[in-house]
Amino acid sequence: MTLSRRAFAQLIGTGAAAAVMPRLAYSAPRTVRPNGIVRLNANENPYGPSPAAIAAMRDAFGMSARYPDDEVDNLTADVAKLHGVGVDGVIIGAGSSEILKLAAAAFTSPSRKLVMAAPTFESIGRYATVAGAEVVNVPLDAAYAHDLAKMAAVSDAGVIYICNPNNPTASITPAAAMRSFLASVNPSTIVLVDEAYHHYVTSPNYESVIPLIATRPNLIVARTFSKIYAMAGLRAGYAVGQPEVIRKLDTQKAYDSMSVMALVAARASLADTAHVVEGRKRNAETKRELLGRLAKLGYKVVPSEANFVMIDLGREVKPVIGALRDRKVHVGRLFPAMPKHLRVTIGTPEEMDRFMEAFSSTMAS
Image (cartoon, rainbow, N blue to C red; front, side, top):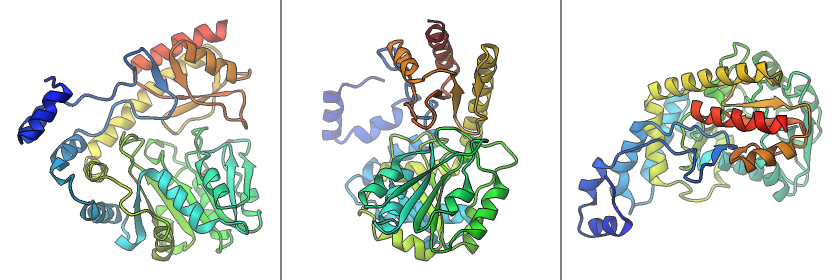
């Protein structure tokens, strides 16, 4: 069914929109844009949100005139139940990016440093800089895991940030190392573990640290709906921690930072566990095919436990990024700590065909 903006506005004006919306067909987001561009640069899920999430948003149009307080409470309760904690141990945010910003504001300062890996997801470093904090970058170890001993050794740390699996490498920091680190780190230092890519991991050497929160007052774990739940454009995430640390995060939070649409979609996504299983399966199959094709060409890849891969090009990556863009394939940006590695999101099989065609041509030139 096709509606012009004017026609749809007229329907809303006559009160008929509610009758029309249920018949509007949902289709997955187009990661191949109308101009032919393939987006493999932001670790997005190309298959779109759960149909249940789409239906929940459709049904929520009637709540658009109201502030989202009730839906914040509902999602908070759902997350608390999922992780076996009280509602005072959960805070909801506009993506996990908001959680990272709250943590930097609450726990870093000119006298309290931020410690993070190099490379890793950069945004919390920017937020801590705004707070006047010194940012200490600790290189990943030889296995592309966080060097936890060196991170723990930094004095006057307000926050140690650990992205696990790590972005941009898609590598993990093993469970045993994480447990030992959390048991020994200075209790006055907040450890913020970002588990944005948790659902994609298959390695037996990995585990979520959310169960450890019960005995670790300085531990915060962030999750997002942007990846496996394919809600990057809706902005929904949360953090779990002990009540006191959650209260400190909440003092930094803007009122009503999330929309009703994001909140109801997130609740529906949590309930649709089959959609998560299917998304994980599709990602694994397409990644396995891509890795096989890259291996045949002689390229090594950092072992990936996420929905993207980091390819060792053996040459400077920046010109390759530009050449692929010229071929309408957008890939990850330059990460200065790994200037010869290329980050590529796992898209649909058709998108990966486009990538391999452009990549082969680029590397042969």
